[in-house]
Image 1 (cartoon, one colour):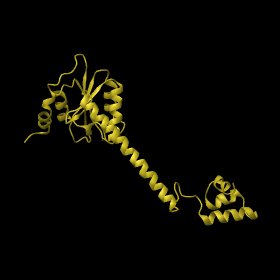
Image 2 (spheres, rainbow, N blue to C red):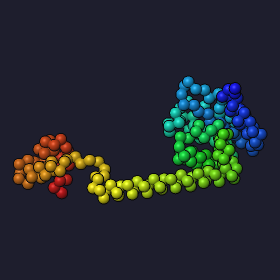
Image 3 (tube, rainbow, N blue to C red):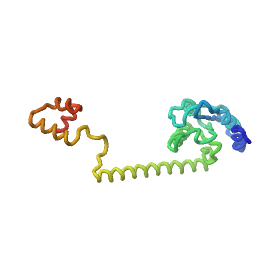
Image 4 (cartoon, rainbow, N blue to C red):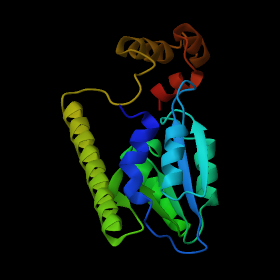
Length: 206
């Protein structure tokens, strides 16, 4: 049975022969989620695929402030390439992936995922696939916004109050207005009585 390192090396051996422009740097990024895991298998696969330097990190993929990833993104420059073993090592969501790839592209660098052959911005086919992915992500966001808006309108039509709940109930608002109209209490008195700010009371009479 293959060890994890052997599986990575076996799965990615086809990437070793891919040429890179002379003088350009190939960076790798390896990540595991917990201290009990090891990045060694990822590092071995990235080295086999041509990485000159590998940034290693132990951090949850849900974290947006991954220090070593930030260092890797600052390091890549024009003509360089950033490698990962799998896309989930780099990003926690489609939007996160596209934002990261945009940062890499703005640096003039390329990106490749060893286990995801289509995720390769160093080839026209890979760039096309990621452009399609970006379009699908935008389409998905538009659908979510449309559904959210439709749901809000249906809720309003049913009389559902949107936003924060009112500080005072209908009965309390009527009681406060009656007290103010009769002069039985000041706005400050009512604010203390109902445990709300005085501005809340003053808005009742505006």
